[in-house]
Image 1: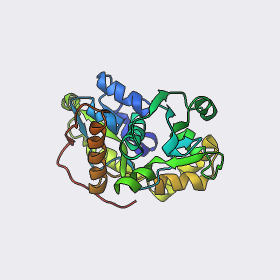
Image 2: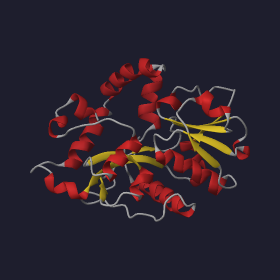
Image 3: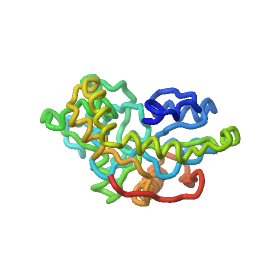
Image 4: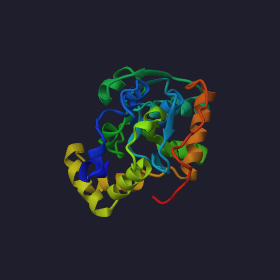
Length: 265
């Protein structure tokens, strides 16, 4: 979002901020034209295309998707889930169903770790609430689900991407290049001086160090839908169908010609 918040890109858009799951709901209800949505919701909303080579992905450890367990993960039977991103919930369901002995009981819950673990064996934390958990906390068993997915499948994981309603493209102003606008915004946000500014801004909000924020933004998150990430996304959708999370595997359709880009972190 760098160019929308710090540059001139926002002048052509009316911008709203909400949870990823709510972005998907707004697209499904035709209330918005473009949204960054959990990957799993693409299977449920017809008439969408993806902006190419932009994603929220991880090549291995993601850090912000944690399963916090009171016991060995193999012995977990009940999971309290933060529902702010449905992809992370689906990923947890897949890992249990395909690799950890079968389906478990999932209960939606506000992201409060102590309350979640009062009556459940494990808690799924997403985003800020996960980043605020120390990875050195010996009280619980902590599972970074980006790492678990990579370890078990050999693939990176794609959590979210920009999707556009096909029906809205005819209202696009003449000369506007959506792909270029969003890719350039991503690239500008990743410039070292801008990462430093983001780290300075978010460190006090999250209660973690600037170095931890910078590491998260530059090492844990990968922002390109390259060939490797595309293969991981396709495998995730296939598995989601196998275990009954989605009714069918959608065809991944892109705005403009598909051009897989950089694999750099």
